[in-house]
Amino acid sequence: MNKIKKAFFCSNCGSSSPKWIGKCTGCGEWNTYNEEIIAKEDKKEAKRTWRENSVRSPKPIPLQEVIGGKTTRLVTPDQELNRVLGGGIVSGSMILIGGQPGIGKSTLMLQVALQLPIKLLYVTGEESEEQIKMRAERLGIQNQQCFILTETNTQKIFQQFKALQPELLIIDSIQTLTSPHLDSTPGSVSQLRECAGELQRLAKETNVPVIIIGHITKDGAIAGPKLLEHIVDAVLQFEGDRHYTYRILRTIKNRYGSTSELGIYEMKANGLREVSNPSELLLSQKEEELSGSSVCATLEGLRPMLIETQALVSTAVYGTPQRSSNGFDMRRLSMLLAVLEKRCGFKFGMSDVFLNIAGGIKVDDPAIDLAIISALVSSLQDIVVPSNVCFAGEVGLTGEIRAVNRIDQRIQEADRLGFSEIYISKYNLKGLDLDRYKLKVNTVSKIDELYSDLFG
Ligand code: TYD
Ligand code: MG
Image (cartoon, rainbow, N blue to C red; front, side, top):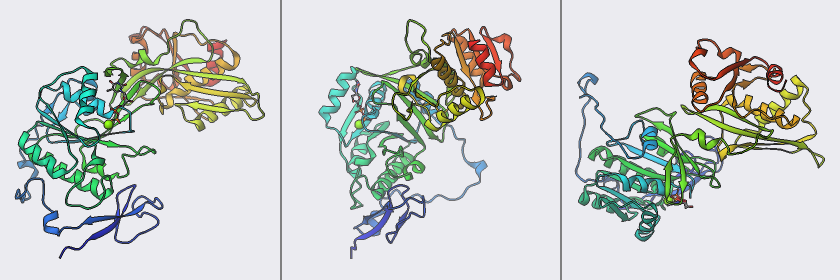
């Protein structure tokens, strides 16, 4: 007899429970449990994989006897994507690309699909064939080998997959898929888990790589379930501010490469353009030198970038001074202001302070502190920081300038871009060969030293 089976799932982490509970025992979130129907058919049928009767029962073998793991990688025409994936798409791997709606995930995947010289299947559950066609026309790339399928039922997708025998499968998006073995709604935790599981079996059994697109919730988690993250081999996140054109593709997890790589794109009217030299874009274009702006040599992942920070300090017109920060942690800004006030006697207490990082990107790198305090002081005193000077250093609570990691890479990038001076922490000097660089390396150990050096 078929009995409807139900369970409760946490919409945040995917833990399950036979009863409703208020606080998730897995992730500690409150009120995240929802009831879902998990199986209406009997168990035997629900266990079917994508290819029926393919029952393999592996035996344990000594690791030495496992035949050498020679991973073959499909090198895509997109250098940024290759970099993020650690050299290309590994055969039989499953890659999840997450991002907020409208950020450009479908555009990126279609663009890669159209440029690949192999037979591939692009399954879309979100858009019609006509919409995909329109997007392809906008991208202006033609490809005979790229097949589009509008389908959301996993078993039907697998039938078409078997008939077509593509070398790459792209799913747009996992939240629209439904498995006929389950009765719950598309996008629910149990559906996501089942569909991802079925796709994973397909990838492992056929050795065809599968790329799945997943939407992201507001707070930045790949929609609800963290569970997708451990099923897949690599998780990439596509992020950026919708009001700006830059997009960053970040690795969150990668079984076949480093997680500190980063790809940068620019959204154009005809698709995404790879940005191989980000610093030139992130330094703002201006003719005359103005106060309140300074450049930091930061690292995003492993990539050095020079980013402009801008500060505006003005007299508060209303009673309470305002603090506003774009792309930089607000609490850290308050801390830097407090350090400047206490250690150097600058009075920010009665001023509005606005801070902006150029290009709409967010920076967590502590090395930006030094550039931020120079921009703040420069705006407060209305003295220009010369545009050929950049900074890399962390500021501590006592006003000391602390060493930052990978200083050599930062200096090299600044050197390459033609800066003539860089300010770094005194404690960063160890092991540094200053004769290698064309630019002048200034070292400081306290904020007041920086002030007297820079503004005299
Ligand atoms: P889309 O790929 O549909 O986003 P997602 O799949 O992540 O939801 O991209 C949507 C945005 O990209 C849309 O606002 C229009 C813009 N866009 C361009 O600016 N240029 C282009 O060539 C394309 C195809 C889209
Ligand atoms: Mg889309």
